[in-house]
Image 1 (cartoon, rainbow, N blue to C red):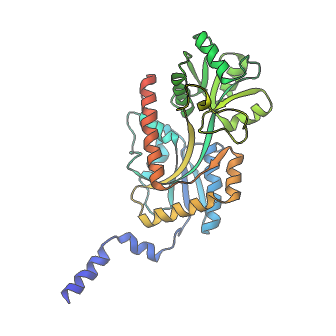
Image 2 (tube, helix red, strand yellow; image 1 turned 30 degrees about the vertical axis):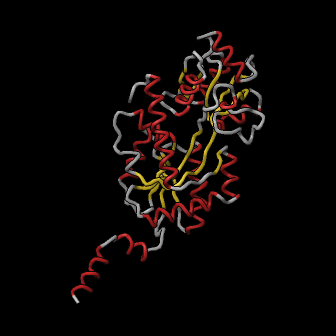
Image 3 (cartoon, rainbow, N blue to C red; image 1 turned 60 degrees about the horizontal axis):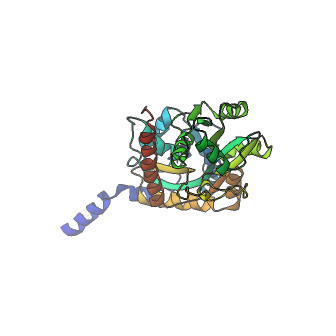
Length: 323
């Protein structure tokens, strides 16, 4: 009798979340996706697209909560301290990895304070020149830059952004003695291109598409693993001789607080994968120049770890001051 009572008590005390999960359907209330960027950008629109599909599948609202500021630390701290019940998620991105190497301290550890759930999608960055540029190809641009050091500068958005670090990595691997010039936003970069203050720029492809299609900008190359679906005639940087190892893509993903129960992690991953594989969601993301792509939690954790290592190395080699 004592043995049976002890077994019963042990079963009731062990893994308390299991009992909760068995009794409470998920989600039992609205789910919040905390986005560390303002409304209207690729991350925000990706979160809203996926969130709408999940809301339909779950029968509960999915609310996008924009919390920009401090390099993602405001949003990250909010999720890291949230109840690990699956109702608060973080829109994680390559910017999460950049911040790990850019800031002296953070109120959370991006490797240990979150439970990676799934990748959501990949999107390209691009090398562009103004329409009046004499450089018709990336090879032309690099050949001129190498022959005339200091005469062609490379523009990006603000110091420490993924675009800025991608430009630094590209400049280094291409052995191009250009200076990277950071601006306070994409419009300022475009104005500098048109005005001749910079000879080329690195920026996310999506916002540049209308300008490329209107022929006010010339797309020389994309930085991803393969050519962009909308511009199949434009090569990837890695197709150029000597740059076969170069590959940079931006990405968005979802993560939860670290102590999320395994059953909930698996449920979230399954549901997110399912909606990303629907033609409707893939099509909406494709219109944003985002390639819908799910992953396992382990694959996302590995991607985050690899990017933290990569961008920390770029930051150190470029001599970028820590914030």
